[in-house]
Length: 516
Figure 1 (cartoon, rainbow, N blue to C red):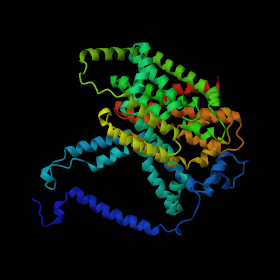
Figure 2 (figure 1 turned 30 degrees about the vertical axis):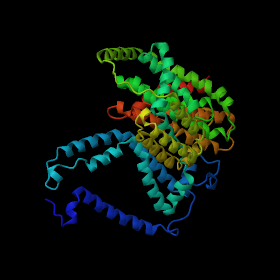
Figure 3 (figure 1 turned 135 degrees about the horizontal axis):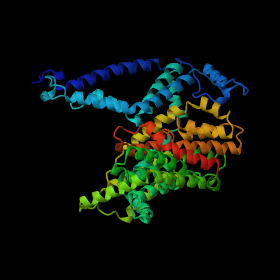
Figure 4 (figure 1 turned 120 degrees about the horizontal axis):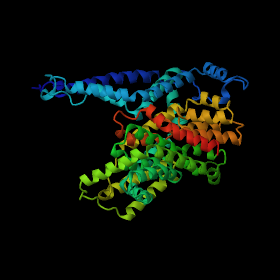
């Protein structure tokens, strides 16, 4: 029995340990604060402007990179930490496996007298840490912390504050959180499903018909409602109409890769919906007519071609899934607990919030204010709403925030590479670079390069959107799709599986953009 006279006896052992660590951490932060004077460290612009490097245009790529590292050693540190983050994304399934092993060992641990009621703690701290390290959405945020510590150690503790507060633009992560939350609501998802069902009806709403509709029509909607919204709707409906039938891993990865590639190019019909296009539309004076005549029809051709090609390859398995669904429907009686119908005016209000968010996409104060009003409206009409799960949008926002923190410090080598490539090498270079950095960052850096001809501008944007499905970090909406669909992959989404699934559609898109 605990001694009431002893205050420590009233606090569980795990809480006392946590309190002890908090006290120690407070001391560490206090010591760090003492070092955070402006005189400690050298004031410097991070990242350093390209014009400040004393390098000649006649030097080769490796010479330029060597000079930039010599002038700014932090460039190498930032890129090595970014490389570590990329490697970490490939190891997330291993961390999740270790987490399960640790939790199983913790559950089998014998009772201890220190445990309340003789029961072991319900949560394994070590297991939770391994789970956190195994979350793909957390990887870049974790390594961003290391990046900020390294920046503070090398440049003074004012440098991370100046960089994150003044140089990094978090508008895109915030927008993705809001639009993803709006697009996943029951009214919006319901109206989207009704519209897409009208197309799927042409194929009698079979699994194949839904699969083709969601992989062709939904990505093209990204040119109107933005790519993150299109990704959210497509992923949620694919989960319901396709992944719930448990396709083979080969078809599951092929579908995921095809979805990512189609979403990446599906936003190029207009000049305001795809992040990599937004970066160049203003500086290069690209309007909607230009986008459709140069990119849009080629993107549509590529989406249809790649999707039909995969349909031909997997047509037998898709037919088997259709038979599986029919047998399941016959064996399971229809539920009599139908959901309450949604009044049309509520759906219109939801669509109005989405339109407001899309129109104000560049003004976070306005679209976040709109989201606050939406939350109030959603609460007032809760009997017509589904449960609003903010965990996936917030995790995706955290992923993108960490990515832009890292990506803003990779320009020193990406810019040097882009300026030394001609049309075809530039296309291939942009496609490959996109796999290791957000494609919007690639096109943004291209706008800083002087002397780019029209053919080079086209090549770099075409390469950036073509490679947008190769990895989860290649395109801003990809983390949203992976977050919504990863529960259908027992060991999590494998980066290699995604790469293989996206390879053929990427080749098809490349041919459409550069050959047609």
